Amino acid sequence: MHLFGDTHLHPHPDTTSGPQWSVVGVVAVGGAVGALLRYGASRLWRNGSDAALLWRTGEAAFPVTTLLINVVGCFLMGVLTVALKEGFTGAPRLLNPMLGTGVLGGFTTFSSYTDDTRRLFENNQPGYAVANLLVTVAGCLTAVVLGVVVARLALARRRPAGAGEGGGS
Image 1 (cartoon, rainbow, N blue to C red):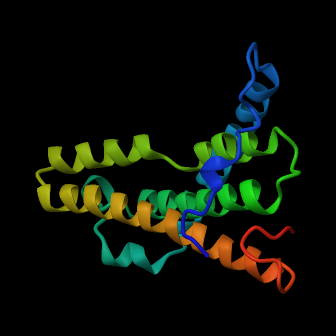
Image 2: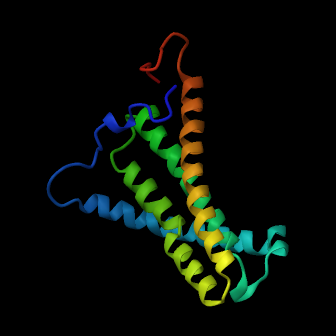
Image 3: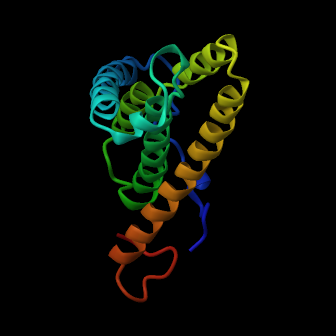
């Protein structure tokens, strides 16, 4: 099992010339769903988590919720990429842009991450700001890799014995 495998060798199903209105449509719908999921997660994690006790609240708060949302979204992107490119190669053409660009793009919030970092600097909290920058990048990159590994392990369990690396599903 290779971490990166040959995913990059699979052609992207949306590389066609001309207008792609169907892709735009599913990305828009997926983005709306992802944004609603992010809103729900932020309400759940902000109000239902003991982690809030560890951090100050209000303008001086460390953005734990934004960090969690971005890390979870990156993990799911790692899983999705491997699942669609290697496990479910016959998936509908519009599933990848709807789930990846749409839902996970709407769910993650890297604009909030940069805005939270700016806010921390403006509130004279450079330690929190730098920690936010570093922990988010490291956490999100690690989450993508973990998602890839988890998906590859799950797909390897599905393959029949003796099918090898290039074996089918």
